[in-house]
Length: 74
Image 1 (tube, rainbow, N blue to C red):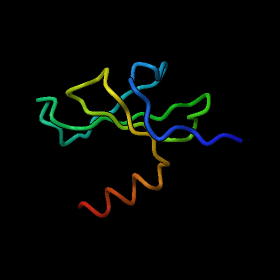
Image 2 (image 1 turned 45 degrees about the vertical axis):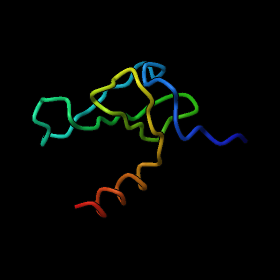
Image 3 (image 1 turned 90 degrees about the vertical axis):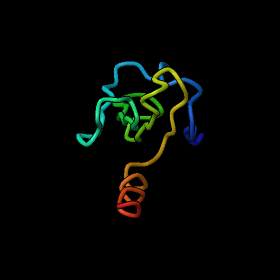
Image 4 (image 1 turned 45 degrees about the horizontal axis):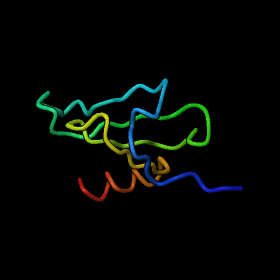
C-alpha cells in the first residue's frame, strides 16, 4: 500500500471539493482554507491551502493532526 502524498503541487488538482474559510476571516484573503476530499487516495484526509494562492500547493494532513495543531496555536 502506498502512502498518500503530504503535499500536492496545485490545489486545483483536487476536484469536487468545497474549500472552507474560517468564520474569523476578514475577507481580505489572508487566511487558510481547508477541504476534505471524499474520494480517491486522499479520501478522509484534510487539504489546507493559502487563500491568497488558490491554485498553489496544498498540504495534506490527517484531520486529527490539524485538530492538534489548532489546539496548540489557540
